[in-house]
Image 1 (cartoon, rainbow, N blue to C red):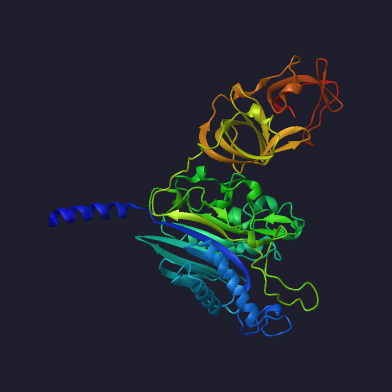
Image 2: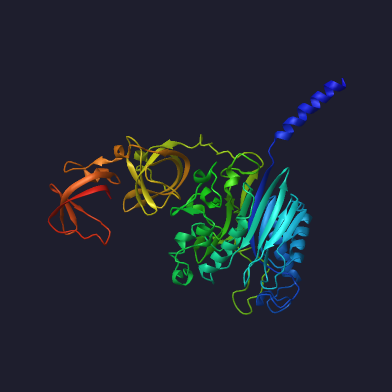
Length: 508
């Protein structure tokens, strides 16, 4: 009887031992969470007990509001930025405990370096087995480096708060280089997450070029900390999962913003412009078959309705005139972001059964802008900077305007479409996600049109001609009786009344 009982117990224990531990990691800039002790470093509006009304009442209202967000967020590990002191962190944890939600038994905060009034911190339900700071000389915020134990595995977390855009890009590059120095000392195969407020968009290498302050920001010849130093770009395109899955590419990193459709990518709104200063960036080792892994497509932005007011993020409120005192309402000017992980091998999520598969021909008939549909076996037959032409065998071609984060000529992809746009009467894809990469098409020539004077160009918009022969005159190409406007790069000069041969040209 005792042997039977032991056998039953073992059968119960073994399956439990195989169950993966799933946990949520988040980051949240809580916007200037100061204490009530004056130490001559506070921002003027946070000097306690002055006309700005930063006092017992407003302090505890802010603590209560941030605690509410963290309770609803329900992350097992949460990185925080803009915490003034251990007293603030302890008070916040106490309030969370009073609300009866997460039990953050473990916490850490950057040591006071007497330079910066606000610091980074972390709360964890898992044991913190090691904590230290990456000290950055000068007027910079130090990086918090924490090792957390998840069952028998260890996860390293770097909590960042990089210099704001009051400073040029060199300040963020300097911080990124200090972080990279530490990464290069890690043991190969170490699982780590880089997160926090980087004051940089996930695609900063593109967006800061179009920033109205570009000349002020760009003192690095286009090099950015988040993209070039941390290697979230390669070959002028963002690094995606398919680039690093099961490959030994040390120091390349995957930014989780790529998990969301482009129009949903924001955690901050500045002058009506949606931005992504908060980032969760993953080591390639979180996509292998060992230790801790990212749970595919679990990344998201925490967007509870109470965090918004009048279509704006409901930040901590201050009066708009007079002394601009604290009103005791609101949360933060940032939204939290989060992702899920477990201690099992990485697995691509392939549950698209509930999403219809379509073809390109039918996309031209769709009227609504936002919807979900899958295009399978799309081949990239044409590239122009960050846009491309997609085509399927025995199907039409379509223009993809800055809709994919990474793509290669001849590449074969399954993509999930999120958004279409009608541009001057022509349908184009403006938001899509690669859900599968299938290698390269060897016979790309099969996807090009054979264009000649009999071709109906109007019926073949967005197709690519393998070659076109015609007479050039005053900006037009004459093919038999057809007169077609010809667009070229400015440096290309063509002579009038000359016969020309064009190869691989797009019908626009």
